[in-house]
Every structure is written in structure tokens, then in C-alpha cells.
Image 1: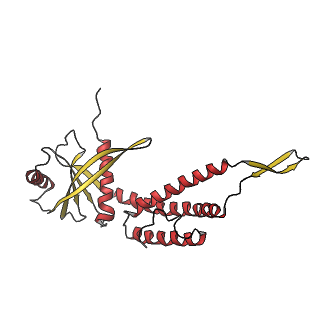
Image 2: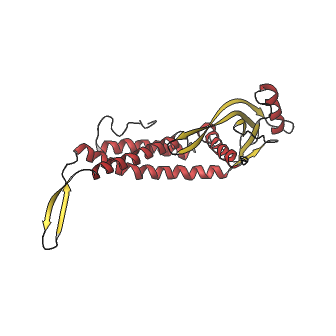
Image 3: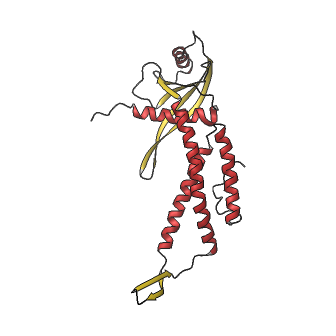
Length: 243
């Protein structure tokens, strides 16, 4: 099926059964990818879709609470007055609300499956600095070794800070440089020296070696998860600022 359109909820036919079919077909495709340990980009996209639905549900619930109320029934014996909304919600809005109520927990269940796979892979990935680590670790080289320690793929990375409303986040960008055949003579240290000598981009670059014992897809899992873990590693090991 491919990706789920950003406007999937409102495009074409707004019908609960049709939207269930669209969503379940998408999640079935995502589940097949997850079973092959191909997490990205579907895992990240799914979380965005779910967050959008949760925000939309909060917004529509807030609007409904703003509807004026009218007296629907008075019970003098119980001294009770019941109210109802003076404005009747349209059929389309009711349909959308039911679609959202179905979609959120269904998406969350799939996200939880992806999260468990992600955590399992993270437990089997190890990151270590290569050589002396400079003060500036926001730019350098990332070495990604395959499970058999035969191929070492080197990437140039940069970590930048961007801000979301109310929070700060870090984004990492990588660019593939070259792959090296590993051997007793060709170690991670010699690879680092070769990269520095050939590129001459950074005189004393931060360099990190990443390895795993799992056989997982490079672009759909290994590289994106390694990048995510590198950002966390660099952030946690930043030197304290002295005022």
C-alpha cells in the first residue's frame, strides 16, 4: 500500500468502514515491514499520524464543550435538570469522531510493536569513541560495522539544534563517505587516519564506531537507529559548561 497520506482522514469518502479498511491495510503493510525488522520510515510516520489524530481529537472535544446547552428535562422529584447541546453535531463530524476513536488505539498498538523491536535492536548496538574525543562532538565521523565485522561504512555526520514549540531537539544529518574492508591490518584506528588524511575536512574529528551482532537492514533500521543513539550518546557525554 505504501505510505498513508497526510490527509487520509478527510480525503475522498468520509465513511467509517472505508477509513477502517484504508487504515488496516496500511497497518498490515507496516506490520509486514516490522516483521522484517524494517522500522523506518514507517515507525516515525506512524507516530506522526497518531499524534495528529490525538491533537485533532482534543481539538474537536474542546469545540464540543463550547457548544451552548439547552434544558432537555426537569425532574422536580429529584430536583434534577438535564441538559443537551443546543447545536447538533453534523453527521460527518460524528463519523469523523468515530473514525478517530477507532484509529488512535489501533495505531498505538502497532506503534508499541515497533517500539519493542526498536528497543531490542538498541540493546544489540554498541557505540564507542575512536581515539581522543574533541570538545566539539557535533560534527565528525560515524563508522558503521556490519555484524561480521568485515565491512566498515564511514559517514560524515553533523548534529544541529532545532526548536519545536516548548522544547528543543537535535537533528543529525549523515553523508556516506566510503566503505572499508576490515582486517587485522585495517583497523578502525587506521580507517580514521585514512579518512582524515583524504578528506581534510576536520583536523581533529570526533569519531564513533558502531557495531551490532544482529543482521538487520541498513537503511531501514541499522543506520537510522545508530544515528538516533549517537545523538543520545553525544548529548549525554557533553562536557559541563563552566560559568
